[in-house]
Image (cartoon, rainbow, N blue to C red; front, top):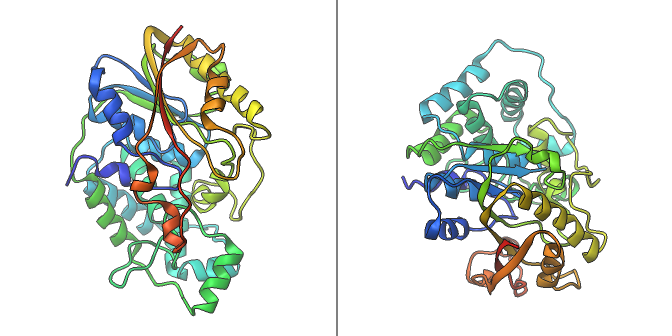
Length: 362
């Protein structure tokens, strides 16, 4: 199994390719230099640093992102992960909160949902060991996805794999297509996924993931000096991270419904100017804890329904931040790769151009 398999443990819509941070760090980085990603998402930059033997820290305000990123920095054998799951599922029956309603009845078979809820309760109570951190990430990746013709690959009824189905639409779709959830062998599916993602033993490298807000200076208290900051911030106008991941958020202890309220820890999207100012706060914080010869590398783009030029937003955010742009170049065309919109059999619009921007300290 390829050493990069773990990076795919739980894909979701907003993610950039491993090749981006790997290429940037491989050129000149070395094992003595710390790497930071203040918008770490599912930990792609941190995983790239681990592959190169470089210590890293990731920060993200999303519980789902932080849970997945943590799994990229630990190791446990597939046997330990399965044993951990088996212990939870075989434990003496305890009172477990099980959500109900039309969505939950059609999303999961009754036995499957009961097993998922037992795992949820145990992992919310204690997720300190490497085996449990990886088990949690495996379950998050298996919570929802398409139904193949053979053995089940996910716990759910037919669903997208990168974002959670919205309840009303999902119930209507499943009902119209006469789709009922299958009785999935939860432990066996965990075993298959553990073998897939943890077959290769990875380097044991220093690092940590912090669930926090990178706009706040205290987030970085006690951290080492960084030589490399490699990141891809949220694109202006993309405000549905948590609603799109509501099922995974539920598994981590969140509500059993879609919450559309924007938490205070998310960047504010009220205007391009305000958004740039919010990002600027992060760049200033990062500059204060970076070594004099540090480099900041940012991949940034935009979405179609916002009338704002992404590079203009990024330039404004960097003004007076302590960082100056050295080089900016177009990132590889997203239209050459697999795009999420194709899952819906729609004719996708040409993607907004992304740029890779290289900065140094002023």
